[in-house]
Length: 284
Image (cartoon, rainbow, N blue to C red; front, side):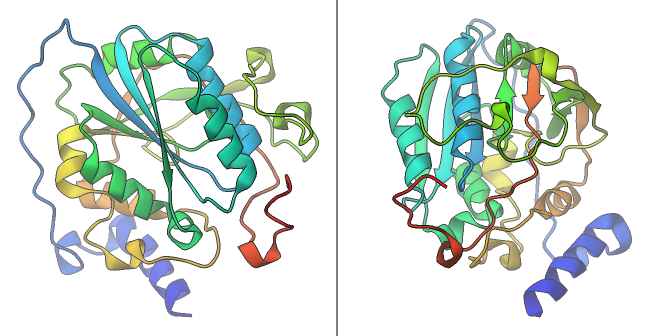
């Protein structure tokens, strides 16, 4: 009951009905950093969470293997639970692949801390050394040219928070659809057919499309000042923290053009508690 009340309360507060200063100290944002060396690849850290979505994570990590990044140095951070064996296997497989410009950074968490994405995002934000931190989801695919274009767009920007104006999505896929992958194969590099996706526009930084300037991420974390969003949970939750995060930053984000971004929409969710799962040694 308390959790439901606070979840609703912060959603209402973050809609603008409550001044930020009444609930949490307004974070002091750092001034824009000086312009960097244009010859240095931009450092981008992508932060994903994965719980029982290993077939989707396989597409995301494959996109970094298949589409070389030349203008950025990418750290691919994936928060996951050691209990989720199929996801561990995917991370182990890709961790064994040498990809120029990409550093694999698997981050295990107890499942109760994994289930509240703000916890992992806050850890990554405060520890990252990147120029920009991209809070993503494991159903987002960085296809041909996407990250190089992101590096060009983000370099020397003063914005606190930006987001891609457009990306491409599938229809809402039922379990068993070819794109969702089978459960009877070992981890592998896979690719999408862009023809199966259609454009979708965004008007604010939400979900897997929140790109934060690195110095801002280190200074304010991710909902770091609101204790409710840093509490472990016993079930995977739909996230509403992005609204509160924008509220704390005082911006909906600045739209930018980054072509080559895709997202697989899926009906089946991986939100069951561990007690409701089949033996974790088996693929769900």
